[in-house]
Image (cartoon, rainbow, N blue to C red; front, side, top):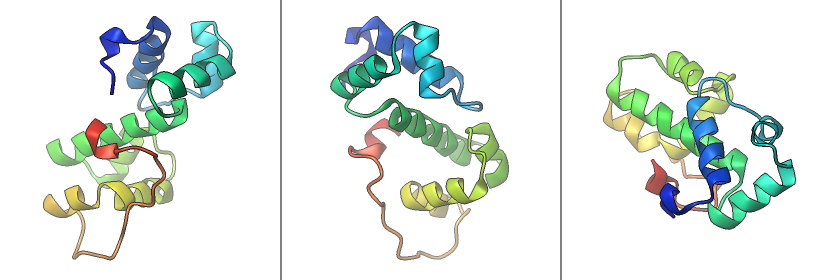
Length: 130
């Protein structure tokens, strides 16, 4: 991806807002309102310059946070879900199994290998960001 230094200030500010609100994620309308642009303009700029939607980027950042907490802390899965802005355990568990299955197995928080496969919810290489 592009370096944040070469991105438009609007996108850098949006990314900073997302990253600073991992535990309580902002909605796209909230981010757009805070930045003084329309939701449509924000979405278009994100898709054009980042290659994903604002929602996808936020999800990736929350998963990145969860991965870091899984690897570096003794927090429970429930605590990590809350700290990463996931309100329901079922959604968080689905994402963990879809995208972070190998990390969970390595650190002993998931049992024997299941036949799980990434479901392609994000149209680019998730682990490049993680």
